[in-house]
Length: 258
Image (cartoon, rainbow, N blue to C red):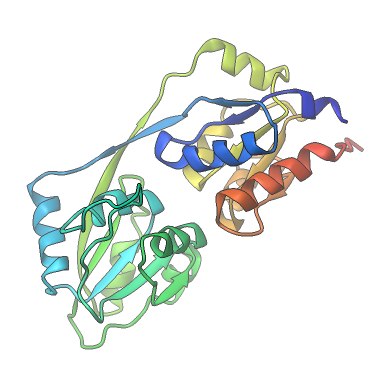
């Protein structure tokens, strides 16, 4: 047993993204601290309602979903009642094209009973955006307020008539001083980064080199490394079980400082 396995694992994801990961980590007998670095607040104003009504009524033929949490809003419009604790499933029109940005977004869609037409990355979408069936075809671009500002112009240049929908507003959360100290001591065995935005915030906290950094996917790993973090593990699949497996494996491995 390494020293890291006796320390807690920090999950800094918003509550919406943290529940399943925390459950899987605890199933592996790991001690978990949950301290969100940010909050995602659903946006349910008139513009949101109009955009989602256009989607469910079939007036928009293509949905580009850029963040898994956005399904909380998108899938609630005209959704069927919740059964046996399962998330509601939106009544989206047949033939709707759905582009998922990131494997985690694709996984979230499948959990709702929705099959993405294509799965892409941010870089792939910007370099080669999907073409519309006909020029000027309407498209809904949905994501959180940290949405990459290059998405809408890239899709417009490809010939889509883009409606951008912000499903959640992002707010930084206040961290207790002890959490910041424990990240620098180190007081944690590992920190898990669920998406690039959380990786951005983690990169500014001066994380001790003995704390394992585990990411959910390649895009989050790239952002973490861009913030000078050393990535010790990456989930093999975009689900909570694979994420917890990567954490467990990283904690079992001694860090070589060279």
